[in-house]
Image (cartoon, rainbow, N blue to C red):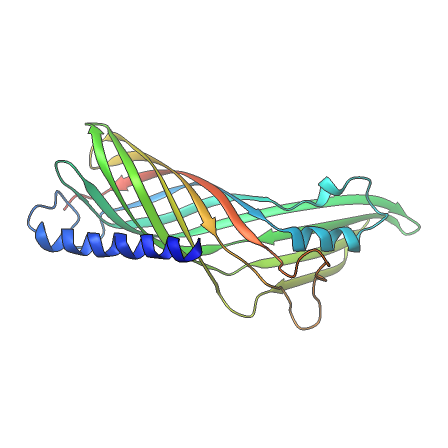
Length: 248
């Protein structure tokens, strides 16, 4: 599946390069530089059996429900730029770059002989990415993105914090030893509020992504016997963003 996704992205790159050579004189706007910036909200789903089962082991007997510590969906926001968006009579394509801030947090409290103990766990899946899309205009104000694909570069961080009566007792941060690379494939729609200047864009995609382990040299989340991966795989993601265009 991973190889198939990479082949689709490479094929899209090849198609776009041919299109730009053949129609370089017919770009509606943005063929030589920044054609717009955007910002929006994002949701990212993933499967983290290694993390979740390890947290169960660490907190056995402390909480009544495992669901309290289940990591599966991070939310946040995205900022980026459309490097160019070329639009023709029957087709359009874009190249884009972005940075996405994603976070999921869970905590629980319990009474101890020292007071109220609160344990908080926070996973950040911040990353930047580059992507390409291709689609077709439906009507003046509506475009359909038939295919969008891209590569992502993650710098994840996991925080484990314990406080008693509001005073921090321990705070550990763990991360990966290098940037983790993933990719995504999806599609969406673009609604033009002011053609070429302001539009709302929605994207749904499936992300392919793994983290084997997280460690800072002195503290690590133990890997359960169920899986040897901190995050086993990515999942469906969704982004809604507002585009501000600068026609050239």
